[in-house]
Amino acid sequence: MAAEENRTTIRRFLEELFNQQDMSAIDRYLAPEYVDHVVPPGVPPTRDGFRQFIGMFFTALPDFHYTIEDVLANGDKVAVRLTAQGTQQGEFMGIPPTGKQATWGEMHIGRMQNGKIVEHWGQIDNMGMLQQLGVIPTMG
Image (cartoon, rainbow, N blue to C red; front, side, top):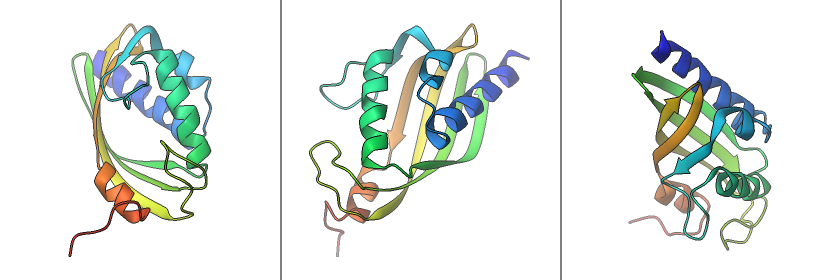
């Protein structure tokens, strides 16, 4: 039963934070001792660091949206496969606004404890996103 509850929690977190841009979801779903293993350099790997990063992210891509493709749970871990989409309207990590839309894939794993996310790992197709935004040239 815990695995199913964890799957439901992750789905709610993704919908509320990323698709509804409800920043209060961070405190509802991330444990105070949360550790993020994929924040960019210079961003603390904490819940407050994550909040800071997401704030910058939503400013840069105000129409950001996740499509949840798969959610798999086993024990205290939940894995998700997502399709992300957004239009860069603001500066992001030193990159000036491009006005271009990008769609890219992501995979994430969250470790759950007492109904909250305590740890996060992820793989994001940053290269594909940056190529679509025109920041990095495409091959060929």
